[in-house]
Image 1 (cartoon, rainbow, N blue to C red):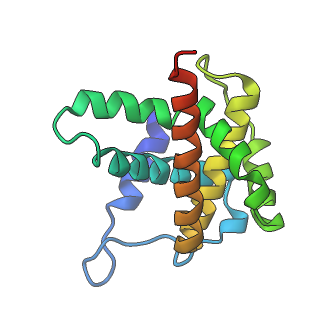
Image 2 (tube, helix red, strand yellow; image 1 turned 60 degrees about the horizontal axis):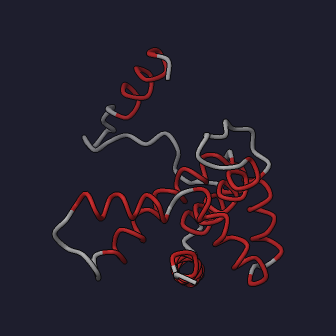
Length: 161
């Protein structure tokens, strides 16, 4: 990030309103007008927190183990698997949000294929949109199903044949 942009953001976030609270630039969030990468940013944070919470049911002492396993689950490769597993459950509106995220211009990391990364960005965009639209019941349904799909796929991959 360029220093000028960072300074602008810090200066705008740290401005008090007339009551001394943190001043807000936007009063509402129009999800349909947001950059899909912003939706993915929110969706990634939500899914990461969800996965960390689920892992606490299995490990509560070893932070490095939690971090490493959690990072693997929320990786682009596994999110792509999750998306393909829930795709048939999605409404046309949800699929449209996914496509916006999938088609967003971004840099693909070396840890995933282009297809996996694009699918994971679309998946995260969908989760971010549901969160920002406050569709919490639907969001919970999809992340629980996604976690189950990823868990099952990981178990199948690690089974000795």
